[in-house]
Every structure is written in C-alpha cells, then in structure tokens.
Amino acid sequence: MKLMGRDIPARELLARIEERLRTRGLPTSEQVDVPEQGVEPRVDPLSFNLQALEENADATRALPLHTHRGGAGQFVLVAKWAFRKTCQVFINEALARQRVFNGHVRDSYAQLSAEVVRLRSEVEALRAAQATPQVQTTPAQEPQPAPSRARRSAKQSKASEE
Image (cartoon, rainbow, N blue to C red; front, side):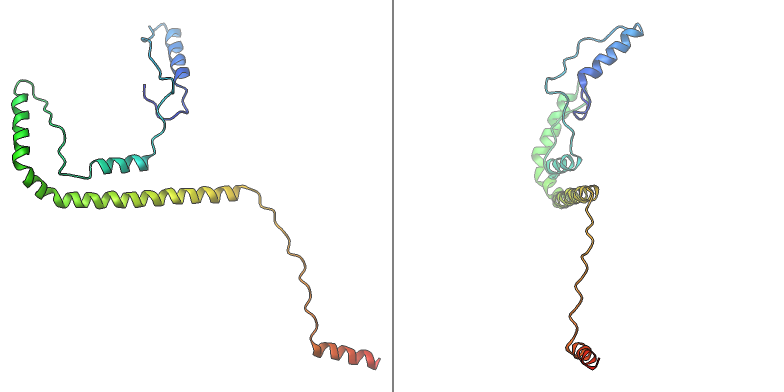
C-alpha cells in the first residue's frame, strides 16, 4: 500500500478497515506486510519535476524497445532496433534543436524552483515575525533644544530690567 506522507499511520488504518469489514460480515483480506519504516515520505513537487526534466531532457536518447504485439512482436522489435541503429545520426540531427530547448526549459525550471523556495522561506520568516508579539516602546520625551544666544540674551536683558 502506497500512501503519501508519514502523517497517516498505516498499521492503524489497516486495522480499522479490517475491523469495519468484520463488523459487516465481510471476509477480511489477506495479511499485508507494512514496511517497518512506514509509508514513503512526501514528495517535493519542485524537486520531483526538476528530476523528471533532467532525466528526459535529451530527446535523442532512446526509450527502451517494447511492443504490445503477441506473435509478431519479436519481428517488430528487431525492425525497431535496426531502424535505430541505421538512422540514429538522422534522429540526432532532427532532434538537436529540441534537445537544446529542453535544456533551457530544465534550467529555467530550476531557477524558478529556487526562487519559489527562497520566497517560501521569506514568507515563513515574515509570518513568524508577525506571529510573535512585538513590544512597542514609547519614544522618550525628546530633550528640548537649548535656547539660542539671542533668546538667552533677550531673557537676560528682561531679567536685568526687572
């Protein structure tokens, strides 16, 4: 059984399903071995897609030979193999531009994926900073500027006149 993520307890899930089948009178299924390490970890879509682009970027690399035909299948496989061997130079020439384009797409996707990861971490940091209560400090009263000499002399002259 393949479930994505470790959030689902596989053994508990199977036990509950078996219990529900038994309560309804349905026969239970055969014993299923659940791996000790649990289910497969979650797949990061960005890295998965980048890996898939990397594996399939070269259009000139041949896929494995196979056929769905029964009796004449071996003849078809031999014909495909012979075609590939004799025409590979022409195939490479015809698909050279596609190979270059696929490389550019792969590189662009890698750059965009890196940018998405960077922006996600930045958003998480901003959310964490916003979630923590920030203590607001009141600005201390600013000291009054010292009176200018003209003001002081005017005040002194008033005081001396009195």
